[in-house]
Length: 466
Image 1 (cartoon, rainbow, N blue to C red):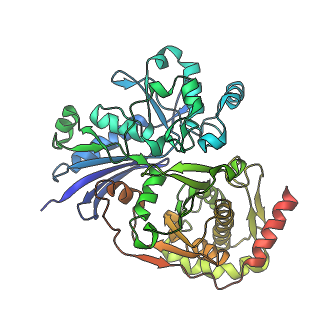
Image 2: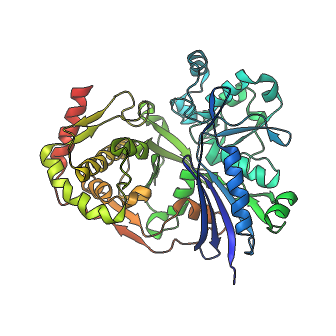
Image 3: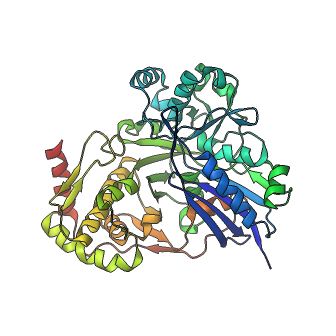
């Protein structure tokens, strides 16, 4: 008997993933497609057309199931503008650099960090900067447009109902004030606040699937679509399903292209004390609460280090070999100093690279994992992380990385989850908040080697390179 009841539309930066879930939280099927960056008017754009094709195909392939809900999830720093029943222009890719004169003009008008929790980030990572540029390029198209974040664009695509949503608005956009749960002074000054679609909570039902989409895909016309949420906040919402996390001081480190640490603090944190210049920020969770956060482009940096290697650092058969390489890496003081993704992370202004680059293939990948652990350790310190840390996402399976992190943070219980697809599971919990992840948490065993001296050498090397 077919028993898929919900579909999660997960639009990551690198990969689009459409998954089918049972009522008890089991993933039944998934279809994926790498996103392709296109150009229009010389500007990198998000792959709206390609994602639409995958979405239609996946919905049709799941149509034999009694689907009741669809939940959209997407990466942050994406904004769509609608004119009538179509995009005013293809959304910008957040890695596209603004023209220098416009970037300087935007910098001068931004609201302060203490209001928005949004640091000034490179390129279009503040989607307020994208919006400013879009209006400069297409004033006539943008003047009457309705604005909505990237995750909620897909809710609109599915239902025809446009909504904005706080986790997406609160993802370093410059346009949200977490303390007041409302639009920022910049959003009001530029008359953007009134042009955003009406606000909805992540778990709100915004409508049912469009009749033409129901007919095209074979899904019931009664399928309900939620507003959806920002992907890292979906991972955070999934983690709250674990009893060890739900009601205690804890930090979630979500790993993928970005490594994003989000602290669930038990006391009120003065968000103005976060170091803005070191890629700290304030996210907004699915419950509307401000979340002290820090991030760096860990997945991208690891890929740049191992380059053409197809056996990534998280592949299971290689874990014993990578762990065995650690003693020689430490003895040779082979290391990577930050930063490999300039402008991002806790050391945004430093241009880093290899010191004592090893010839051995396993040693290079082990070194990359140690680098990620050292940067993550720094980022976690910046937001006051303590007591409990859950590492989720792809790199939770990179044992050198998680075990090095456990060794560096000996005062913290470091866990990985036995469950996978954390982002999609978090989206599912919007429908059934009481849903618990399959399996429990596994406490990470620290590396056997003492890496305190390696960390000291790494810090000294940074000073030498500065």
